[in-house]
Image (cartoon, rainbow, N blue to C red; front, top):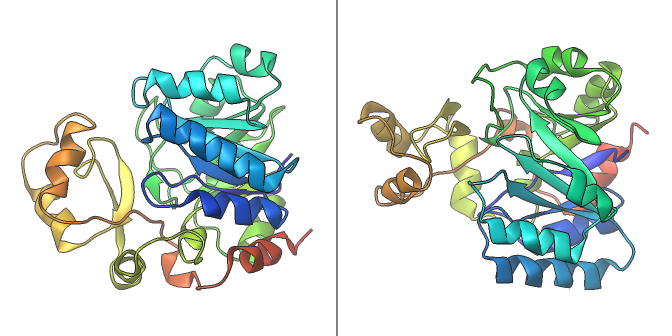
Amino acid sequence: MYRVVQAPMAGVQSAELAVAVSRAGALGSIAGAILSPDELREQIRSVRAALGDLPFAVNLFSPPYSDFGLYEVVLDERPPVFSYTFAPVDPVLFRERGITVLGTATTAEEARALDVDAVVAQGAEAGGHRGSFLGDELVPLAELIPACAGDTPVIAAGGITTREDVRAALDLGAAGVQVGTAFLFTPECGARPEHLEALRAYDTVVTDAYTGRAARMARTPVIDELMAGPPPLPYGQQRAASAQLGPLYMGGTAASRAREMPAAELVRELLSPY
C-alpha cells in the first residue's frame, strides 16, 4: 500500500506536482475532477511520459459531479491508481483494467459502504471538499482511523504536515497517509501566493457556502459574506456565483504548520518514519 499519497487539489495544483511527488517515492495525484476529458487525457499522458513505470493516481468526483467523459478517459488510459470522492463508485471496470481503486470516507459507516482497495479516511481537519455521502459529521482523524480499521487498508487524511503527524497516524492503525495542504506550499504545486497567505492569516471553516458542497477553507471576509447570505445554490451554480464576490481559498487546519519547501524534500520528511 502507498505510504504517502499526495491529495488531489482540483483547480489549484499543476500536473508537475504529481510528477515531483511520484519521483520522490510517494504517490502523486492528478486532480482531474474539473478538467475537460481532453485536458485530463493530456495530463495523464504527460505525467506517464515523465514518470515511466513509476505509479501515479487520477482523482475524480463521483458522478454526476465530474463529467462522465472523464471516467471514459480513465478507463481508456488505465492509470495505476484511480481515486474518487463524494459517493461510492462501482470498482469492477477499473479492476478489470488492473487499476487500484481508492475511495474517500468521512465516517466509519461510509468506510464500510465502499468497495475499494484502500479507504481514504478524511478527518475533520482536512482541507478542501468533504467526501461525505451518508451525512455531514466532522470526525477528528484520531477517532476516524481506528473506527475505519478493518480488512481494507486505511489511508489517513487531515492535518498531516510533519513526520510526527505521520507517525501518529500509523500508531493509530493507518497503513499510510494522504497529504494535501502541506503540498500547497511547495513550488511544484503552483498555488498563488495569496492562497498561502490567506491560509496563514485566517482560521478555517467548513461550509457549503462556496460551492454548494461542504468544504474546509480559509475564513476570509468573502466567506463570511457568503455564509451570512441566502442558502447556497446546487454545486456548480454556487461556485460560479461565489466567484463573482472574489477568490476563495481551500485548505486544512494545519496550514499554519506548513512550510515552503520543494515537494521532494517534503516527501522525504513524511517518509522518514519508515
